Figure 1: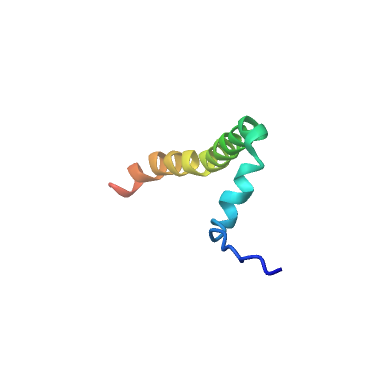
Figure 2: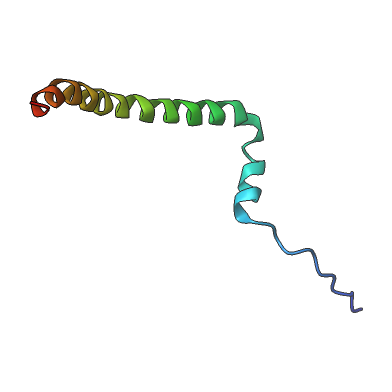
Length: 64
C-alpha cells in the first residue's frame, strides 16, 4: 500500500519560528530592549557632556 507523499510548505525564517515561542514573555522582552537602549544612552552621556564642558572652557583661550 503506497501512500502519496505530500509536500509541506517550506519552513519560514528560523527567527520567526523562534519568535512564536516568545509570545508569553513579549512584555518582558520589550522591557529589556528599552532598558538596554536607555542604559546605552546613559553610558554615552558623560563623555558627551565632558566634551561640551571642555569646549566651553578651552574655546575662549584660543580666540585671543
